[in-house]
Length: 175
Image 1 (spheres, helix red, strand yellow):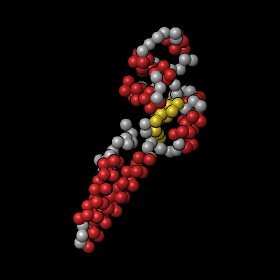
Image 2 (cartoon, helix red, strand yellow):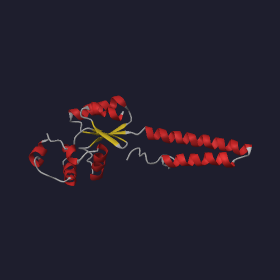
Image 3 (tube, helix red, strand yellow):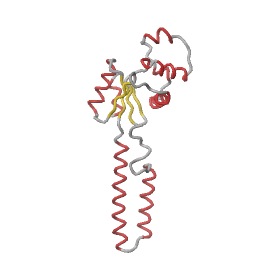
Image 4 (cartoon, one colour):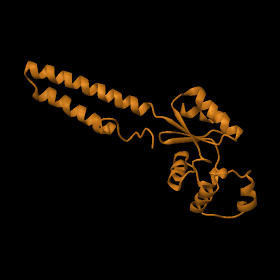
């Protein structure tokens, strides 16, 4: 998963990095008395602060992911909106690169939606095979995996939040 916010290049989670910094500040205040030790410790603290700033930068600059169908006008409009607002994104053409069950469930969680809410009822396959039938959430997930054209698009993800980009202006909450 790109740009996972759970860790950084130091291998520390942001809360652990903060605790490490606080511990070192307390050590400096309480135990470092000699002038040389204070200078060395001040340099160490500056390096740690710079590392923390890098972690904060990594957290704040999470890449966008666009689940896109280039044959769909609304999906193209959503992608254009993203392109106009950032250069830090990846495009997944989910008809060419199918979404698996765990990715689809993750998207549903980030969208805060039920599987049926993600289904495009205007698709011919929905009308012919699924309209008026009752399925469980897990069954809808499997149906969408087998028939990805049923998935509403575009879906734009940033961190733990996802938005349907129909209309494209909906995406403004991510920027």
